[in-house]
Image (cartoon, rainbow, N blue to C red; front, side, top):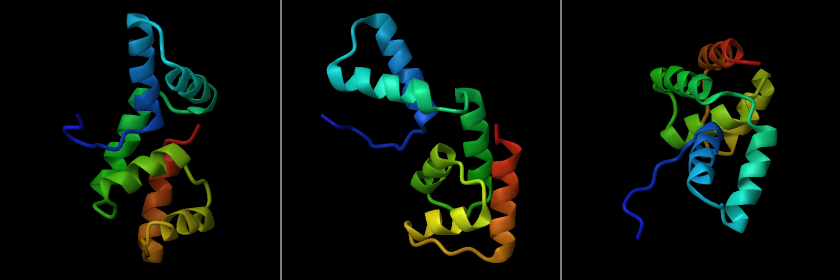
Length: 108
């Protein structure tokens, strides 16, 4: 039974799966997800949480958009605008620059 739904970053999902793996064997889908995340997550849990907090502090995006920004980490303004268009979010040039500044601070 689902009690609540909360979007989580890929780094959080990887951390949860690591903990679950220590407790016992992962199911097939969990193992595939674990392997994918291990190869593709570029931020640590601490870095992802810091970036999520910084983006949320702008008060420009819903939580689900912030989480996906952390997961995707767009590196160019055009990429950010294209990404946000899929969520029907339009930003001013100034807000795009603020967002990109935060993303670049947490870039690897």
